[in-house]
Image (cartoon, rainbow, N blue to C red; front, side, top):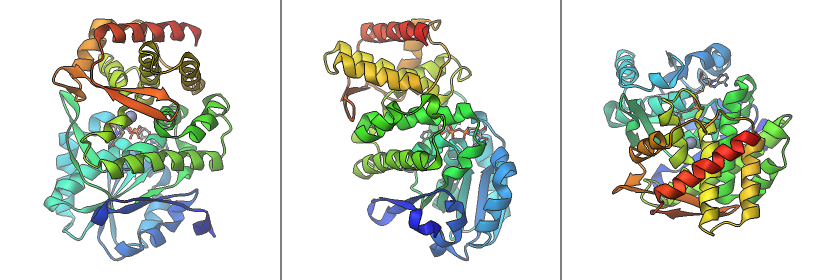
Length: 369
Ligand SMILES: NC(=O)c1ccc[n+]([C@@H]2O[C@H](COP(=O)([O-])OP(=O)(O)OC[C@H]3O[C@@H](n4cnc5c(N)ncnc54)[C@H](O)[C@@H]3O)[C@@H](O)[C@H]2O)c1
Ligand SMILES: [Zn+2]
């Protein structure tokens, strides 16, 4: 019965192709969805909080696939570290995990990125499957095969491309997600809509503030639409040689806001929310985006909820953080700019003066929030 309501999104990558299965209650279908892996040794890498909340249920279905051993990882970005990676390798070895083993990551983007990299590097690569439990990880980090950890001096510096063998998304996990984390993921869904889905955009723009009252059908549809966009982009540019960069819409300044506040003030999505408005304002100043579309985009961002302030951040600090970013090539700041809802371009030549003006626009909007 449930299977009929599942949404399947293929990620076509030749012999590395896989399916993203989305549906409320899809966790119960894990024995079926992971059928080809039946009998494998499974190491589950789970977030501590998530495992406390959902471990019994997830453990029960995974045991129908194979023998499982569970490793929990403490919550927080700081555990996406070399220490955690070493710990996972040690535990994989101690549990006798071999080339035919399977790593299943249950948690948000931190757990997915970490477990994915552990799987990519152990014995030159094990199969892995993310079961994302945050909105952000459902629509973004679990698809596309980018896995990694942080270096003490730079986020996501150590990583690999290692596509999962399947992705299982059960939006029911979101019921226990703290509201601020849910909102953080919603900004990423909006980002995807601005990149390539006008229908998704209008459903977000017309939704109740902070998506209050969105039931599971609406959430499921939005997740599927965002996953489709991510899958399409990844299919065309798996290793981020060009096109995949459009997924960084809102992220150039977004990352700078996060770094300039030592990652303490904003959730990632909140920083991206500000970054989306900034990108739209730069596009408008350049005559690439008309004023009313700028207003529509900015209003859609604001509807998702209040965000911590940006107006007190010294511009010099923002610019310094921006220039340390991986997206800066040969000293040039690459920027993804929206030219309409559903369309973006990449520009390599953004001037400091434009960035300054964009930050001023944000400060002015902040006063109205
Ligand atoms: N690989 C990629 O392509 C990619 C893309 C985007 C982001 N990322 C990475 O993702 C990470 C952020 O991921 P995130 O936003 O999922 O954060 P996260 O993994 O830190 O999870 C956020 C918090 O929510 C809790 N949580 C998770 N699921 C829950 C649930 N169902 N109920 C209650 N609590 C729950 C976690 O314990 C954690 O405290 C960053 O490290 C970022 O670099 C990677
Ligand atoms: Zn992001």
